Image (cartoon, rainbow, N blue to C red; front, side, top):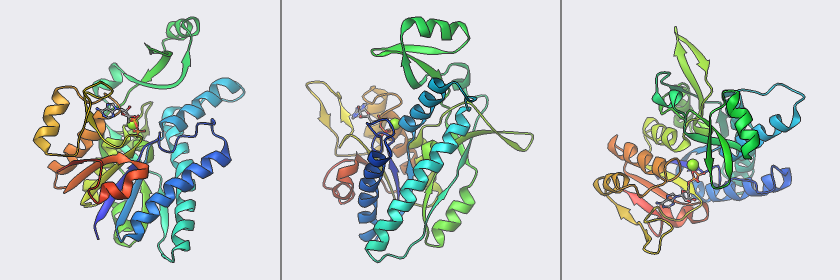
Length: 306
Ligand code: ADP
Ligand code: MG
C-alpha cells in the first residue's frame, strides 16, 4: 500500500453544459468512481482538485447579474473548494460504502500563503473568466483592468504566485494519519498573505499542480498522481513529430522544461510539481488522464518522473 496524492484537473471535472447540476453530478460521480477504485486497490489517497472552469462560471454569474457585489478571487476560491469538495466528498463516500469500505471522507478548506512581493503581482499573466470583444476590453482596460488577447478574444489576467506554505498542513497530516480520506488545497488553495502575524486573502489564483506537489511532500506520499485530459506529457506537443513521454528522469525532465516543450500554465506546472516532489524525497510522479488512472499507476501508461 502506498500513499498517493491525486490531483484532478479542473478540466477533468469541467461541466461543458455551463454548470448544469445533473451534468455536474454525473461528471463528479465518474471521477469519484476512478478514485474509489484506487482506494479499493489498497492505496491511501489524499485528494486535491483544480477549479479554473468553476471560478470562471462564478465570474460569469457575477458579471452578468449586476444585482449583487462581485466577490474577490480568494472568496471565489473558497466557494469552489466548498462546492467541489462537497460534491466529491459525498460521491466518494457513496462509492466507498457500496464497496464496504468504512473510511471517512473530509474536505478541508485550505489557505495557502503566497509571497506578497512575488513579481506575479506586478505583472500578472494568468488569464481567467470570460472572453470579451475588443470594444468592451478597451473600456475595461481604461478602468485599470489588466487584460491579454489570445485567439478567442480578450481576457482578464491575474497574479498567480507560487505557493509558499499550506496553512492547514498540520491538521491535514493529522487527519491522514487517523485514516481519513482528505480532500484539501482545492484550486491550489485560497491565496493569503501574512501581515503582522495575521492572514489576509489576496486577489490571485495559485496553480493547483504546484500546491499538490507541496502537499504530497508534506503528507509523506510516495506517489504524486496528476490526472488531466491528456494521457501523456509530450515533446513537440501538437506537432507532427510529437513524442509521448513514458518514464523520464529528473535530469531529462529539467532539460525538456528548459527546451520549452511544456505549455506555460498548463503542462509546465505539472512537470515542475513532479520535479519538486521527487527532489524532496518523493518516489514517483505520474501524469496521465483520469480514465487511465489505474493503468498509469501500474506503469502501463502515462508519463512517470522518477
Ligand atoms: P488541468 O485542468 O488538468 O490542469 P490544463 O489544461 O492546465 O489541465 O493542462 C493540460 C493541458 O496541457 C492539455 O490539455 C494540453 O493541451 C496542454 N499541454 C501543453 N503542453 C503539453 C505537452 N507538452 N504535452 C501534453 N499536453 C500539453
Ligand atoms: Mg491546469
